[in-house]
Image (cartoon, rainbow, N blue to C red; front, side, top):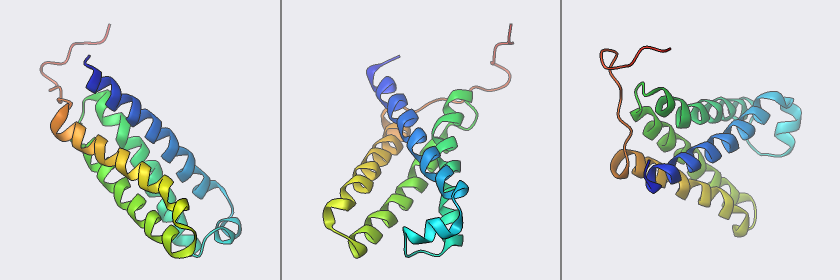
Length: 134
């Protein structure tokens, strides 16, 4: 495994953990609690939570199973859109320094999407060439 693959896998797992936590919290916390911390409606925050959890799964599972690994790129791109929205909302409602974290996460997601599409793509394994489990 090359350094690039190791770096991308590390980023994918760290980003997946971040989004699994963030999305899980949006799904577990009561809506009243969520809307205290944001100007967005509770239903939109729940939707974002679902998107974040599914995106976290999409960052890791397709590459691990080698089933449709291109979905990793799609998951990273989708989460990048979520982070772009987070940057815009943060800039509208608070200091610009608070937008640095979602911006940095977006940059890392863009790197994962580019890395898995161009730099070090994962290949799919066909059922015919897959080795039987022992």
